[in-house]
Amino acid sequence: MPLPKPFEAALPSSDHSRFLFPILFGICFAAAFVGSWQLAQIQPGLLFEAEGRRNMGRFITGMFPPDLSLNFLRFLVVPFFETIQISVMGTVLAIAIGFPLSLLGTASLAHTGMLNDLEIAGSPGRRLARTLPYVLARAVMSVFRCIPEFVWAFMFVRAVGLGPFPGVLAIGVSYGGMLGKVYSEILENLEVQPSEALQATGASRWKILVYGMLPQALPQLVSYTLYRWECAVRASAILGFIGAGGLGQQIELSMRMFNFHEVVTLVLILFLLVAAVDFLSARARKAIV
Amino acid sequence: MSEPVYRLEGLTKIFDGTLTAVNGVDLTVRPGEKVAVIGPSGAGKTTLFRLLNLTVRQTAGRLWIAGQEIGDLHGARLREMRRKIGTVYQQHNLVPRLRVIHNVLAGHLGTWSLPQALRSLVRPREEDLRAAHRALSQVGIPEKLWARTDELSGGQQQRVAIARVLLQNPEVILADEPVSSVDPTLAHGIVKLLVELCGTFHKTLVMNLHSVDLALAYFPRIIGFRDGQIVFDRSPAEISDDLLTGLYAGRLTAASAEDSPDAVAETVRSCTPLLRPQ
Ligand SMILES: Nc1ncnc2c1ncn2[C@@H]1O[C@H](COP(=O)(O)OP(=O)(O)OP(=O)(O)O)[C@@H](O)[C@H]1O
Ligand SMILES: [Mg+2]
Image 1 (tube, each protein chain N blue to C red):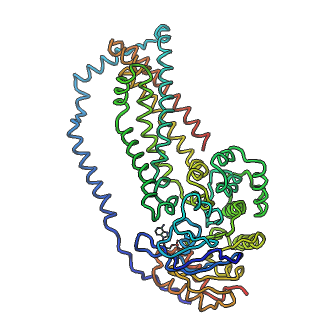
Image 2 (image 1 turned 135 degrees about the vertical axis):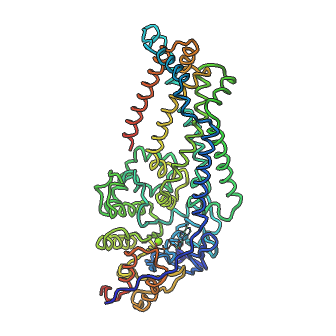
Image 3 (image 1 turned 180 degrees about the horizontal axis):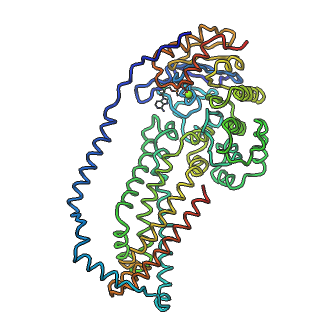
């Protein structure tokens, strides 16, 4: 029996714009790179010139030996816990802000695709009622995260005074924007079939969310939140520089006094803290998957 | 009681303004009927099912379910209508990270309140537990009650999906190629199971099948579907080989570039009368 002839189907004409975009994007990126190299005045040689070397040397030799006197360490107990508190409370606040925003800002949940098709088809009013909160939530999230936590902290220090509280607010707001964006991306990219099936049983979007989407997304959501907590520990140290308490404020004080041997102790403690958080969150991540 | 379960008049679905997936379908399905829909890949069968289970909105035409026109139905009344229709899909329609019991109990999701759903995820009620166990026994895998769903085989997952529909207790069961991802023996088992369960519980069954053999073996009414339209609608006895060849004709010479070799082989097989049983 002869084999069937190979198919001679006409090739569908390709959509050229699909290839155009990545190419254009690549060219723009290359141009941006070359431009930035010049504009940012990148001169790696400067690091190794005599002047630069001398300054670095002075800084580094000044750091040793680290100040490990009991007096100094005892003095650091409060800032140490302050840093942890700022990062934890900041992250909790960020979740409280970011999670609700992310739900409103997830397109597949809010206003497009199978979970919305029948609701909005043929009714401009219902379509608007679903699209508007989505657009608003997206806008709020991008404002929150595009303003650096540093700038937020400046504003909150003016508003509520010095101390850990403005640090918590700054991390909460800017990280809230980031968490919201990433949460909605995670939810958006879930497999849609389980949600479709749950909807077909007559479930509302809320029930589809808690019964189908969140259980599916949980490992990724937790994992990213823990990563943000690590970042918050580092950020809370930086925020101390502008008066938001914690280890950062001590670093800033010691720097200003040229007490570099204290600075190195502080940086070491910060390093250990970040490493510990890293270890903890890795364990937590493993447990949940 | 004599009200048809489904009445379709010129039902049409056009995607993106250009792609006509379902093209003016007229159809009536009466309570308790068992209907198989067969037809080549891309004919629009899945789209038809999504219209029937109220997942997508038709572009044109009218649809009545149990005498009620769907039209502009939305909100709570739309969800109430969806509860009356149970769907079994080809695969991947369970929540993989949940335990089997929760996927089975998802059949209750339409009737539960949100707090009830949450509470059940934490700890299912005693009566729900028994109901889930009973449903799993009916599909033959009671021992999997507490297993994690993504650890089951494809065939076992399909049974879980059927158990979910049993818990939902709808008036109609739609099954979109429920056996495409399992081996032929199991395929017979699952189709038989669905047909028998629908007989026992007096449900209407509409099933989409790639395998002509299965359709002819188990269903008293066969609908041939192609290019978004009904080509024939008759009993197995009235279905000739010419009719089948016509339904799938042209599949090997035109526009098959996107088909996997398996799909082509399947088509060849279903076009070849000698391979049919009886
Ligand atoms: N959501 C969608 N958006 C755009 N086009 C779609 C969508 N769903 C289906 N289509 C198109 O509609 C046509 C019919 O698809 P459908 O899935 O209904 O076919 P089918 O008969 O179920 O095929 P198969 O037997 O392979 O499952 C196809 O051309 C498909 O590309
Ligand atoms: Mg299909």
